[in-house]
Image (cartoon, rainbow, N blue to C red; front, side):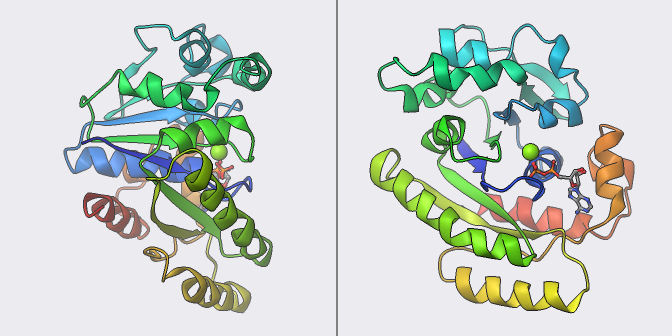
Length: 250
Ligand code: ADP
Ligand code: MG
């Protein structure tokens, strides 16, 4: 069965999109057919994967709003397929307002792919609005990047509560694929927050080793490449590989 994993955190800048881009590449390296779905109107994932969001006529917006088939899938961008997004997605909330059963629109769109892929990774926007709800309703699992920073730490209560609400009202089967501490530095504060996060979260799901803050991640994204291509010997590749292997055990 296809595992549909939404990378969710209502905070921005916690490396959600970077995780989707790189995890997708590592799943591809492990021979898994993988589709990435951009659900952020900013289209960062679409950009990281080498496309120009504003130039695209066909995006996930068309699929969600008009149930257009075939889906606008771009094939084999560094080994992964991609359904892109752009700013038109920001109007979807309003446009779906009067649509029945709108929460399951993305789920229905992805169901048409049946078993083409081993993994579908959904990149959520940094909000708790309808676009995140659509993503979490379509997902079998949620993977949660959390920045090792006190502000992000405070947000985890809200985040866990959101997952609870989604399970209660929209998707009772939703499982937590794990927590990924991100943007970790060697500062004492980061270390104590990492420890606190492990204590708070490890009873709920696996807490992965932290992904360090390293400029190579940002440089790779600017270059529109996964880290493994941009910097093939980078020490953080080991963590990314561990996360990819963890997805096989779900
Ligand atoms: P989000 O999707 O949660 O908003 P992004 O993945 O877009 O976050 O990351 C935010 C910024 O941080 C981007 O510029 C990205 O290149 C950079 N970044 C992501 N991961 C790292 C890292 N491990 N080290 C340094 N910079 C990173
Ligand atoms: Mg993002």
